[in-house]
Length: 116
Image (cartoon, rainbow, N blue to C red; front, top):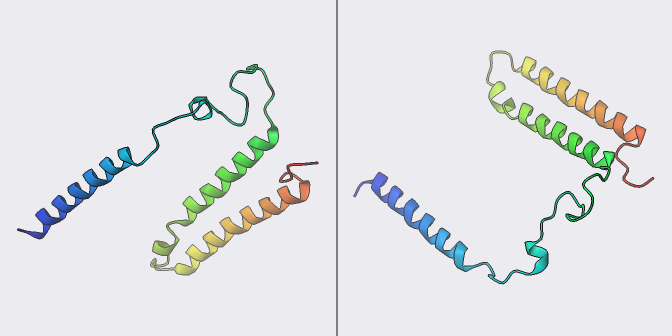
């Protein structure tokens, strides 16, 4: 048999074995807490007009901002192979400096503290 046929067969067998084991492995007895809906730390049966915590949204936005930073810096190893790697380093340093200054500003303003 060729290497491609063996690889495809092995991948299919491994996939089927893992799928079957994943159905047998978990516990099938669910309790009330696992079956109840849970969203954002609020009681699901309460009023729908409760105010949201602005600190929750601040942390979510900061997470998205720093997650975007990682996405922007992912092409950095390939950018080092350009004709001018110094330019790539300057742009990456500018992004990191801007985000670090923003984090320092948020920290100084007390935006990262949960309790007052």
